[in-house]
Figure (cartoon, rainbow, N blue to C red):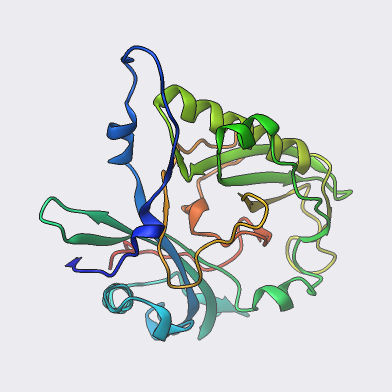
Length: 291
């Protein structure tokens, strides 16, 4: 989709590092800037009919979204088909909490191409109610990571998307930084270093976290559980753009956890920071996200 989206310049001005010395064979800041995306997370609800089709789509705070974004989601959802919700052996109408990663890329003609790059369709309960349920993994103690001093000096900011193996006693057995997206531009070497610092800080903190395993439901007797937790690294006093506003960052490469089986097709950066997402639960989209 092309459109003259009102993307505030302030949201697109990604912090850049000063590079001294001779030109490097690695990607330059100018080249890396071309990889920078303006993106936002859009949340809402999807009503799924017994046959897997979308019965209704409710976007949170639709009035705050750029018109082109709302239109894109409305159009795409018309082609969505989900794995039917089966209760007592029969397909039933169901509800899923939705979060979508929307990305805008600037074209040479000055317009923007807007696309859906990732989505998550979770449980029918909202996050607050989900934290109170005995059939899901819940957090007990999740002390935030410390901002690495080297990263602060370099001006690094970004988001680390963790995937965690939760043991039967609620401890963290394994943890992996599945993806690290940055909001600071440097050359290729500097950005590798920034991702390393942020991911190591998140991993160190996560190894001390504690969870409450489910005591009810189909997975209560599982040997272990897997969850995703997004972590944002911001400077003191810094605020993220509000809902419906664009945020500029550079997506990092994604790696898979060796203990995970079949890929669950979830895009880590379609998840909202500060929540715990149990892998293997939620609604499975059978058709392309773009519709």
